[in-house]
Length: 228
Image 1 (cartoon, rainbow, N blue to C red):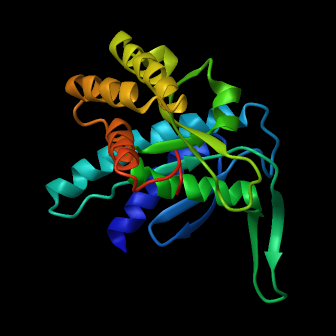
Image 2: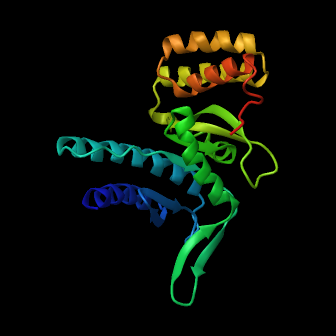
Image 3: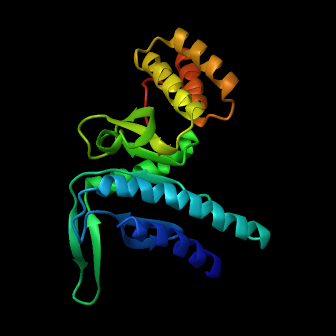
């Protein structure tokens, strides 16, 4: 409990610095939201800044944990923006100020999907569209989450554009060009491009995911891009 509390304190501090509201702790997870109770016109960008700051804080906490012989906490994040019901929910004996709705559910879903792609931060297209001038993203997949009529494009948040190196920007641009060939379902060319990409970036989880997926398609074991 002592170590988990230290971990929660580090992440909560960064969330609140970026105008976020820490809703609750669920196991070893932190649920937070922006633009409530106080309105924040820059809430989407602040959420992205908070996540990046949380990653840095997580790494600092893990360095301390390693030196003390304690297991590290590997944190992943999901971000979505949209309408939600926010307020006091509960019974006459116990109330909780929280957010409810499909928007919240999708953010949670994105957090869990990081394991599939080897990523740390997944965001919806709605987030990317609002802050793409300030932050660097790359395409990941198209999913069909429960409760949504249309497929949802998801992306990986890589960092702030102002701090991104030329090499990082080139990597994201190269990947997004490759991803376009995946979207066109040109499997033969996509597999060739993926093989070339992983030569330069052998630990890239998103490329590895799609490479295995396409290999499965050729063998007849998978049916559709982004089926989860």
